[in-house]
Image 1 (cartoon, rainbow, N blue to C red):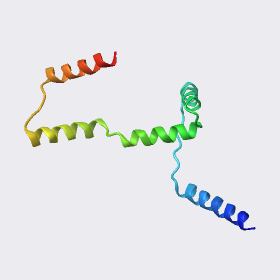
Image 2: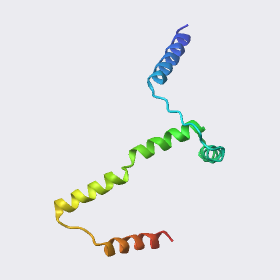
Image 3: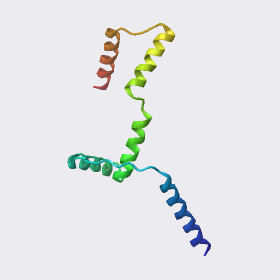
Image 4: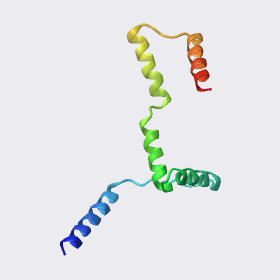
Length: 100
């Protein structure tokens, strides 16, 4: 009886938690795209929903391009130092060479 009641409470809590979570619906996803995402999910040992949830969270945690540029501009204003286009390209080339 106590075990059954504990299970019922646990199920109630899951339902309440899910009821508070927002849902996102994406329409008109091409079949090929859905299939590719499903393959990636399966390869990672997750359901498509779990995989997409993790990807959305990862995307939201990363700053967008505007935030990155704004931060860089603020740093230049604060320090008075910046990089020339040539310096930036040298750094990028060096990083690309390291990956090879």
